[in-house]
Image 1 (spheres, one colour):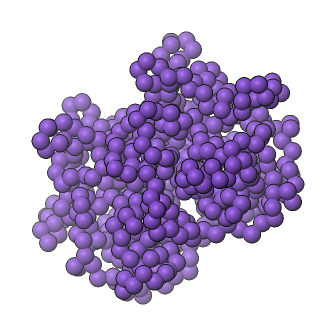
Image 2 (cartoon, rainbow over the protein chains, first blue to last red; image 1 turned 30 degrees about the vertical axis):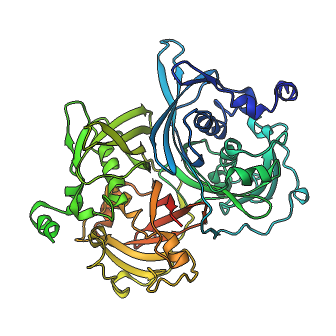
Image 3 (cartoon, one colour; image 1 turned 180 degrees about the horizontal axis):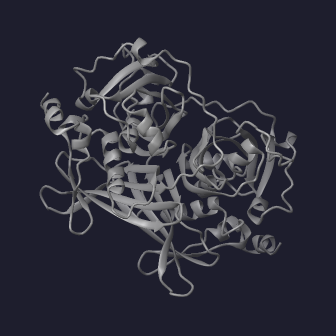
Length: 282
Length: 282
């Protein structure tokens, strides 16, 4: 657990993962973090958060994150990464960004784009508001058993999981299930919620096809979109409390399925909604 | 109705709108089409379709559209447009694209990016499939009254509307409503469905805030994502039949609301799902 030791001395592993070194040309250099390792390369939610962080840390940024779309073009290799952040247009209330994550080929040294993102930041205003998607009635986090991830893939150990319904199948028997999962989740160790960690949380739900089919087929997210509904004040008030998450899906066809997620705070306020399209092998 | 006359002689207005003139450097020149005019500039669904068309018409394209995210960075002016289409990465089953729509400033002549898009094209395969989102039970198109758009904004006249439920409020009285709309819709005149017209159809639903509030506040889509679930064979089989559409929303807050849509064929097969985040003024 070397990264847990690192967390105790150097801050939270999520912040270490997000570390961006500004370059003279305005771009950033980052490095994959062992604590967020997935089967191949880093956890996709961590990569999404990193690309968003490139915008958050940009000196020309206006406002707070409103939307984020990350396209996972190719595998991210463990090692250094180059983030090129470009402001496309600045309006009065919105600002549009394009981000490219590039890595150098080990043999040729040539840079390739492995992930792209578009980000919109915005100034939120006090206007009419109404929430239409009510949070489901569920037991509080402390009444939901913690899911043991001590032997799971590394990035899963960066979260505290309290599954309410629709957990990972306990037997992989090709039985058929609904696609919905509900859970309480937060960073582990606990960390105050911010836009970057909220973006990462949108991708924590295991692939719907594993639940629907009760078969752990190989998968990979192709494109992920996050809409942020909370502002900075709501996130600050949330602190390091658990987030209530719900994931579902609509269709699996042709080797790709969709997956959607909603994240609420404990008071039932929607923090973010998210959508993704995911490759599956068989 | 000059564009209807043009349709009769030169083909469908949607195809005229999609016309791309290839340039020596691989980019395309297009022109806004009067038949798809919105209050300011063109209908957003038409712009989304045009950016997708830039990829569809690119000589290096692999596979069919899988996902499309369009960021409406600034207003599109009536007039010529410049489409710059770049392939970011080509994998075995997916290909990643970035598209920028640029227009020249009338006074300085300088090009500005007004819309960006990321597109993923993919090779679909015959694997396990299951549809989880069943189409609602609704009357057939011929039993649903046609919504009269003869005096509405021009682009609305490019579609045949048969509202099933959740239609545009008839009185703007600030009463409160659910956000869901169901309708049958297709191009007018009828046109065989393809990926570009399916993309445009994902944006036909009037803004959820008009329904929720029964108040026509100024709005503008900021970012639109489309996931294509149909393949070319399914679209070919669909022909020019009506599409069953359903739109809903989850939250309106801080000057932005989300909106989602599902499009099925008459047999209940999901053709596309879509999500957008929309600015509202008050």
